[in-house]
Length: 290
Image 1 (cartoon, rainbow, N blue to C red):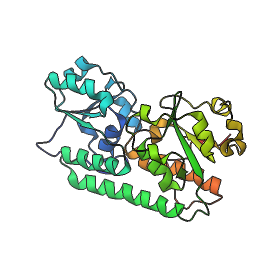
Image 2: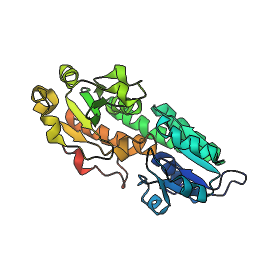
Image 3: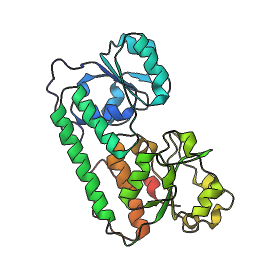
C-alpha cells in the first residue's frame, strides 16, 4: 500500500516530523505523507524507503541533539518506555505526541489520529477502512476452520512472557485460542511473565515465538524442562514470526503479522486459506515449523 495515498501538502499542519518508532513512520508512508518525515527510529525498516531518512533513536534512547538540529515541529513517540525521551524533548521546547496503543482498535485509532495531525483525515479513514476490511476477510476465513488450535504466543524467552493484547487479539482473529487470555490486558511485559510449568499445564498445540530484535532459537524452546510432552512439541509446531511484523503496534501487525498467523493456524487446522497475500507479504521462511 506504500505510496497509494499521495501527499498534497496540507497547509498549517506539521511539516517536519520525527518518528521515534516504526509504526508511525509506516503510517505516514501509507498515507503518502512521507515527505514530512525528517527523522526515524534506527529500527525502522518498513517501508524500505524509510531507511534513507536520518536515524535519530533506538527504542529507549535517542540522539537528542540530533533531533533538535532537525527542527521538528512534531515528534511522535510510543508508550511509557519513551517517557523520559519525550520529557527531555518537551523541556527543549519541542512538541511531542506520545501514543500508548495496546489493542487492535487502538492501533486503528492511532492511524486515524496521525492522519488528523497532518491534516489528511479523509485519507486516514480510507486507510483504516482498508485495513479493517483485510482483518474482516481473515476473520471470515478463520470461521471456516474445522477447529481452533490452542496457541501460546511467546513474546520473550527469559523470563518467559506471554503475548501483548493486540497480538492475542490477532491470534484469535486468525483462528486460534490463546492459552493465557487473562493476561492480555496487562500492559507491561513484567506483568505477563509466565512460569514454563504453567505453559506446559495448558498444553498449547502451537507455539508462535517472536523475540524482539533476536532470532528465535527453537532448540532452546525444545529443551525446556517437560516441554517435550507438550502437544506443540510432539507435533513439531514451533513457529517464528519476525518482530517487525507482529510486535510493532501499527499497520504491519494488521497486515503481514495477522496473515502469517492465519497461515500457520490454517496449516495446523488442515484448512486451505482463501486470503490472498500481497506481493510484498510472502510467507517468511521461518514460518516453516520444526
